[in-house]
Image 1: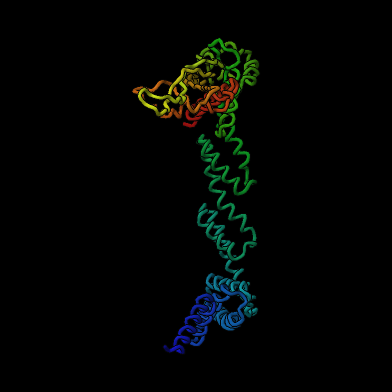
Image 2 (image 1 turned 45 degrees about the horizontal axis):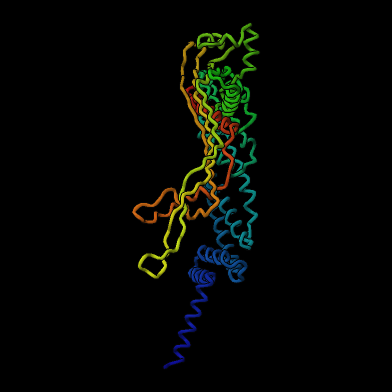
Length: 456
């Protein structure tokens, strides 16, 4: 066996392995090849990548400095040619490209030689370029061509964001068309769209013209006044109508419609008193509509609880028959060997049962004060119930069966039956909690119906 040959092959493999583990060496190798071929840009790029992989690598730092200076100088050469050709925008972009390349190399630890001789020339060209673009943007805005103006101001900002009031003009180029469209929507009484545009303007510039005033004016003119009359209780139960009313008002107030203005009982009484009217006279849609129109409402909500059933059963404890299995050893006739058999004895266990149930049925009418007509009505119902069984047995629950076996066969293990003896005693849902849940659910359903109609 040629051990010398094996050693050489192993050495080469190990070298390749280390090279694979250190890609910076391959980048440096490629950079040197590019340098020999006179490709300074390629060489600088390979040295740059080597520094990304292995920061502060000495040969990569030296290589990027040497070839990066050449690349940067060539880029400035292109800048000079564009200056001579009076290509202002291209000149500005080329100078910015030079600055970008310089900063890129600086981030990996290489400071290239920056030729300061071009700075004065660039400032002169930049100012001339921005001045022309600025005037172009102003003309476009004057002609209401805001989209094109925005593109111009973006270019100016990319070159010099501090130039005059370019930031303000960029904001105006966005805000002005929205502001004007919002005004048109407001005049056309399209209040929802107007509000959307005014809010967008304020998001760009909170102090833009009189947008704040116009937003408030939009909300004021588009307001939908909804008077919520006290709930009529057509049942014998006391107090449920007040709880439902409170929940209904709270739910209506929380909804996200900015134009809905909810007027509760207290405010209604004050407004009606000013018109020398009373709440007791609002007993039907016609009278409610007339009163609502007098106090500036657009809708009146009339609600009544038509059914309310509350059941509270227990706790009731019953004694229930079951059968407990037990083993008995006997000796059969004509046999001297004892045998074990299973017998059943009748027993009783205690079952404590409790149930609570609450059922509501509510009828509502949404009345338009302008027409006196019922524009929406519905019967809503909701139910909550809870029940609990708690079984107790003093004997061996694991041997308990709900009935006797048939055909002398031991019945299957009654898992569900036995589990009731292992339940931890708990308290069922309280009447107050059920009432709250039912009121909340009905209020949410009613709110959804009303908002759906008003948003049409």
